[in-house]
Image 1 (cartoon, one colour):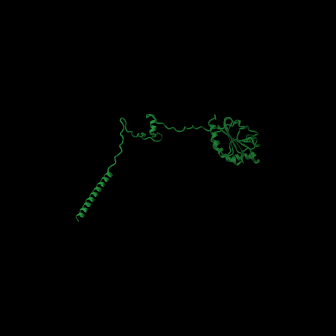
Image 2 (cartoon, helix red, strand yellow):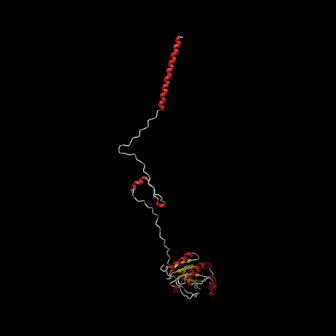
Image 3 (cartoon, rainbow, N blue to C red):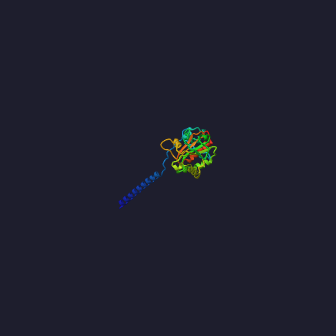
Length: 255
């Protein structure tokens, strides 16, 4: 019995020692895990050196707008330019000066051939009208296209003095009834044609001025003060160009 008690007491002591040793190791491990890590040391600048600071952005011009605003630059661009260099002023594309379109010059007009007479005027030739701008139109009163040009011609004729501008309607009939002088006089009154009319009954001038296989009603020309053809148009239309040509030739005799 005494031996059993002694063995039990020895086992108890050994157990207590084991427990104490384990408890001591567990505490050391906890302390090791909780201990802070040592930070990596940062080297100090060497003697005579300073830590680089960021380059400040260039200030902008207060209140500047549009092309006067100071553009931002990168550090490389700032190093490449002297600090006192003036700002570059942007320039736009050059502005072309307005130049009026030139007026064509086809040279002297052909002569009138075999004119049978003149209506509504004492004029008997185009040469008598030198010194004036002259609008010449080949027409016949029954031609619908000719009639459609008349409103603009009437306005243009009334807009300028006879000292500067004259019209000549060269009447070249297409049909027999259009060759009758009484019919021409009546048609002119009905249509509002008040300018001189040259009677080209056999269409000799009509074909002489329009050489080739085809001639046209209406065909409108503008002659300058020297009798040169400065505008030539077949048919209706181009009224603005016609009016502008007349106005420019009247305003500037040197054209």
